[in-house]
Image (cartoon, rainbow, N blue to C red; front, side, top):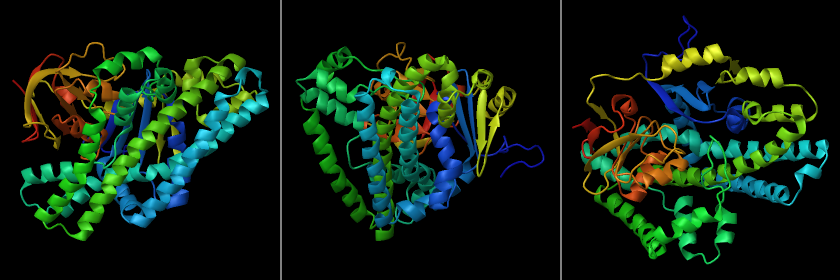
Length: 473
């Protein structure tokens, strides 16, 4: 659906999907980018739709044509996620790469990087990223499939659930994952733990993101521990044991066919898989940074320069190539336009596309409509808006405010726990915002397209998760 006349990737007046703008650095995302115009297609004979990924001022902005990415995602879902044997085979393969990553991470933990040779450092970086590529090739199957399955599942369920309001509630239950998220697992472990040092060693990466990494201190966990309910494990286990019963009750109530039930199981498995994958990505980011700190010192590159590099360019730096001019130029703005091939974009192109595809403020608008992802208790709440573009800057967020964000990702969880409701510009019924809001039992609207542009911090709004509307009052 590209605009040939103007050589635009997508029609700016068309149905645009965007992820962000959110904080992010290119190096962390470069493996994913390389995988999707090379290795993923080579293995699965499918392709992510044409993509713009823009990086500027430590923020990133991902853009697709919505219809194209849905079509690509649906192909992957039908071929690789829907057949139970196939998705199980790919998941098991992916778990093997997770184990391989853990082996080399343990090796890095026990190696004094300051004392190894340049050749050994290069080999460690290379071997780590060869495994990470394989991790992403298999691990991208649920990622891309997720973008194609919402409409497909809704259309399939409409044959059995005629009332649209009922459909939203049915979807909320049926698409829920049947295993705990890694954040829930951490809370249970923290509540039970008598050894906070050991707990910290296991979960120090918990607040990592594509914007940066940190090693959380023991004090972070010590301060959280008193606020976690003593009965959290029992509550979570009861909820997980009740969920299959709730799903089965809906299957019987609406006489859902086995074909639809297979779709539901595949979607639920995919949601759980994506959450598990994010945990290991957060760990990978830590070990990338451990190696980069040695590279920064040894080869006299700034941290900011290295953040703009492709992962394979780091090996060039280690063998003595001078990339300072290239990386310095990227600091002004850098991007990629990829499909079957990849074109690098300079600062001028990035600024043009950013301005063209970023939705503008809508003066005078008083409401936004979205997809009901979670009704919470009652479905309707009122409160003050807090727009959060950077989940690491949470100091201004007050308990009981309504979170508005371009999208959410795992690093938003700590803010979502304080939120009265969640509203996002992008996302669907299997998105992160949807799943976590259901876990927290709070109202959530996703896919509003422009809620963060309509409202301002401090606006008093009503989120109506029965009707799918957030309105200023």
